[in-house]
Image (tube, rainbow, N blue to C red; front, side, top):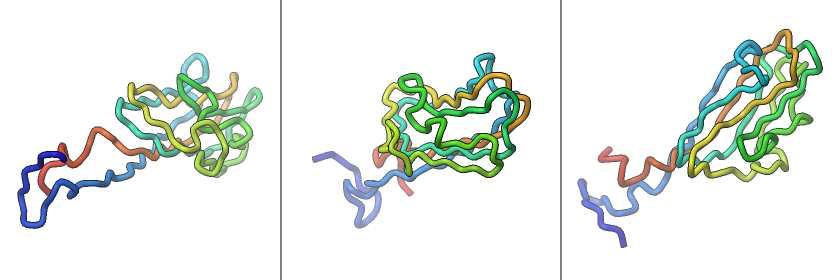
Length: 146
């Protein structure tokens, strides 16, 4: 059993048993992509990624628009190209509703990057990536007294 110093009447070792789900939205335009037409979103070590979503804010055009969302282990782990309709403004794809590699979630024990990959030669377009995650570094021992 864990040792825990109680601060209030009724406190016990299970006072902080849950972790909040954090939602982070990252806006980007096609001009934000690197030379390989990728967008790298850092993930800190100890993050339990529950899901990733992609929204087409402004339709992508130029070349042959295509988009996948993955990481350094799998370029299509979160969303594959058929999940996202890049030429349709307002298109929304969420990994939890898919049968992709990371649909059940993934623990980034060593950190890493969520990588949004587009096809080359884009001339326009903007998107928004939503990360749904739990910071496993924050827990009842580190949360302090509320």
